[in-house]
Image (cartoon, rainbow, N blue to C red; front, top):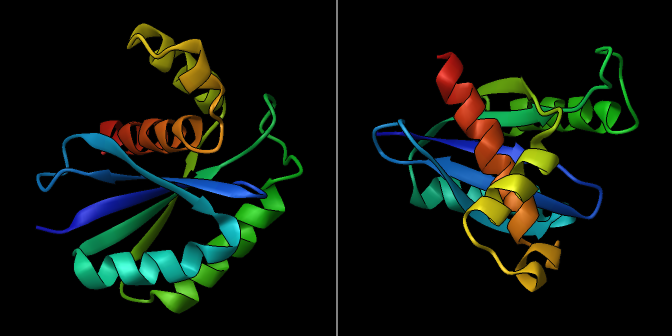
Length: 137
């Protein structure tokens, strides 16, 4: 059964999350350098069946664009060209980093692990974006 892959795009690093095979739960997957994102997705999709890519859509509290919004739109356009057979969805990502940090604290992550921004927070944020998408379906 195809999975859904979520992307929390960053300027340097990008967090990824994926559903279980039943598309019920979101699981943190990986944090990669943003410049290697498309190649990673191509490789991942060659190994795993993926039918939907969910991209976190950043906005300000009032819904207006922020500095990352144009980058996300550009990435959405690139994903649509690279993966024409996959659904590309945007989902509001406001507060996901804060929610990810709170989740890590609640799960008992040590302060050192939470500060390890180069991985944990980004992929947990992607999982929150993905779970939000699943909850809306």
